[in-house]
Image 1 (cartoon, helix red, strand yellow):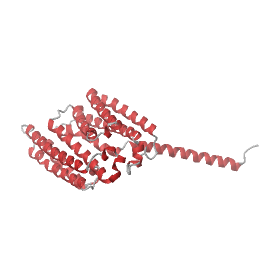
Image 2 (cartoon, one colour):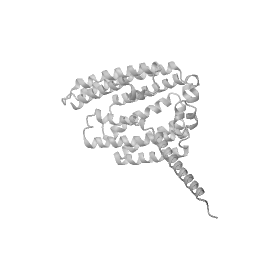
Image 3 (cartoon, one colour):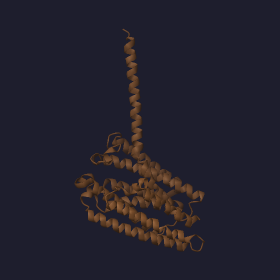
Image 4 (cartoon, rainbow, N blue to C red):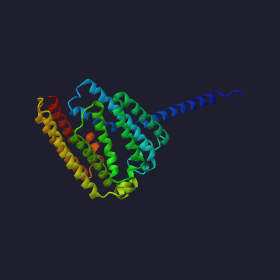
Length: 320
């Protein structure tokens, strides 16, 4: 008995809807993986440009290409670790007011797929780092991945140590830029990068501490251990050391360049936007007006203006 024409049409319509649904699900998963890679966070990887830029060699084609390659390596490495971290912390993220919207936490991407995609990106990062700058960069990227993995599995539950672990990600990016381009890193440069990163991470914890309220320990274990006074003191300490170290670095840089005719006063004047930017960020964090200081660069116009001023002053001093 042959099927009636209406039945055949119904089956064709059903198959068409199923195909569309499967296509929609596939595109949703792909979009979820891309979102889980957190491309907005790639702005942090711009730290790889700091060392070669401050050394005055970023205008050399080879150095620029190597630095851009290093930037790409850290985009892959960081995104891979973000996906692995989301897959590991999926249950805790589902209880968090913001993290519950992440693709893995809301079920758009399965934890197993997130781990697989993360592993692929990490392998890509390690492999490409060899082609960009050989073993030195491979070593730096490897250290970044090891610390990030240790943070995901253990260090995030250790007070103070977890601050250092997250801060190391910023510092390692800055070091990678120097290592990849063979730019010597001064002690004051490392001090600025280290304490500046610790200032940003502590500010983020302070924002979480205030916003999450009494149930803060349920969302992040260490927040149940920290006190507001401790985080406030740490913010003040790291801000003070960051500003002091930057002043010493800028004056040291001016002294080293005094014999080659650079416009030294502009480098020295660059301490002004650094101090004002630090104080502005400290005020916002202390008042509980910001959750993540690093996100201020995306929407705080005053901080953006100070950043542009800093870039202009330092660029004139080095390249003018």
